[in-house]
Length: 390
Image (cartoon, rainbow, N blue to C red; front, side):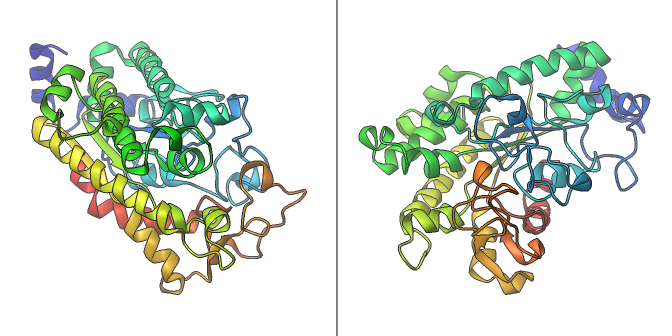
């Protein structure tokens, strides 16, 4: 948008109703879910199964959840492709922002104008910052999610015009959640990356990819961080660069959870006692510390923009270590089947019965939390991290 357009938007922002609120009102979405005005015009989501609301339904992959018992507590028990018993962080955050209760997947759905105006998820379960991660399970790579976002912007411009669409994008909240599959299902399961990288170098590679989502110019990014970010970190930086180039100005990028304490990882690497795996947890903490440092550098460079790191490690680790504190009974197994390994196709109504009360479980399957656990996590993160980006 040119200077004249930016100045016009700035002046209009002084009015009672901002341009994007006027557009949303005209489309029938001018009122927030809980009353009042929405905090942002839209929520736009990128990443993996923790935020995929059903894109993999349209992808030829085994990494899917469009069958029962997934979604048993949502919309009458009709599975939507969400990897949980109900709503996931994408939906819960949109609700907290006053946008809507459910965020649709960009693929495989008949999207309305209102859906596009208020946000969609581009996430694909099983993907990661490492392109190999998506290849291993035949899902959409992060680059393809960015390609879908570019297509989305064209559709948005077709609804409200290019200037209004640019205003919506620049004021929307972008959520990026990936990296868990890179560590759990690529580095520690596939034989390729460990031959090329030790875990420290691989973490650097991931952080490098993530930060490409945010930066304006790869050359500028490389000049400003050369020598302080390793080759692994660079790949993560690259994705953030591209997201920034496409208009994003409010970006929340999530760190990794305590991967070694996820039920499936306990089963695979925790021994007979199924303890938390310290190696996987160290990798997650290392990733988080380096990502946080990289985001802080970008915050300094992009002074007028709101880009924030969101720490999910501590709150989930505490829920797992002390479930009773949060009203849970079980935190080492999922609700589906034995809870030790069942996820995706292994969590099905033919071979895997579900627990009597999923509200007593931190995890729904062996990899993903329950809706109630997600509610607690989002309630914890929203005032501490998200509010600062609004």
